[in-house]
Image (tube, rainbow, N blue to C red; front, side):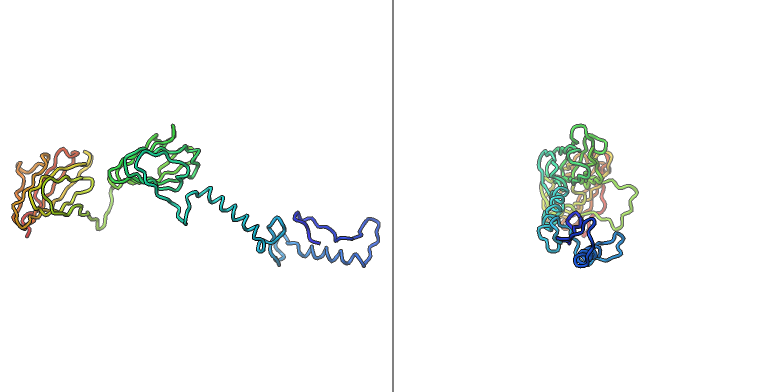
Length: 309
């Protein structure tokens, strides 16, 4: 007779074994055979006997290979645990992107999110105990955007109560259950490289156009300017580097077929002998370079080359 779900063996029904009862082959053989079968079906702890049938895990005594309800129960438990640990998993994508254009207070549902700030704002983090150890969130800001990341109450971010991110910055925030840490941060607008070796490094040409009239150059985005002059041009600058940084700006200026176009430079540009360059004639190309290291207070200008045909 099979054992019950608790492993307790019961003698076959009608077995007359009792104290002071004479053993008779007519009924004892069936009992002994049943005991022998159950002993043969017992799996040794040391694995000396291989399994000859499915392992029964169902609480109802039905093998899992034929018990759809048991499999469904296990699947439900697994799905529930995945939902707890990976609330944003959807269509096999771990991260989701959320665009933010103002102040925002993060929630635990922002786990595995990329918060993309398109305007200057303050990001307030959830309480570390609420977020829990291992909470991960990616934060990035667009060009020209400044973001202040503020820990909840007195909780810190790498030992500070706030963390500032500048234009085009990126940061990976990780919670340990008590405070926050930034495991990776990168500002693509102001990156300092020390003792670096660059192979085949190149500058992008930020501005290629036909220009005339007043033109403002955002020095956050441009330092190689290639223009065809179709009229007189007046230049102004915005967003120069800070006083601790130097920037060189190269102009490649081509006169159109009419020629005689002039450039009026910002008053902060200083030339050798106090006299700016005279540009070449129609169809010709000049290269002018400026350099500043005092926060844009002054720019030293010089002619790199002229009258290229």
